[in-house]
Image 1 (cartoon, rainbow, N blue to C red):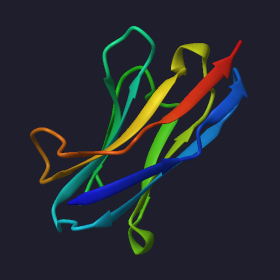
Image 2 (image 1 turned 180 degrees about the vertical axis):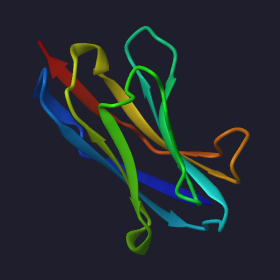
Image 3 (image 1 turned 180 degrees about the horizontal axis):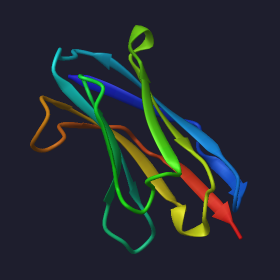
Length: 118
């Protein structure tokens, strides 16, 4: 089992920044992917960003150039730096983990609320 705990959500004005953290514990795998997803009220959960064990990253078009995913291997923590935030970024943000680099994510955090005011 892998446990994921997110933190860093909050309320900021449009144009502001937030940094989300996701701490992983328990059984981890040498080859893995950690990702961030979000779900806005009344909408489906959507992919935001991911980072693989190799360090390669991927982003959705809606956040590319504004969000940056990174990791701290010593602390088993992944970060999502969010800049130039927009009201449409308002959502519950979830951290997810999967063994390997493809397929479904096996483990999910509890989510952290991000609210952007206009």
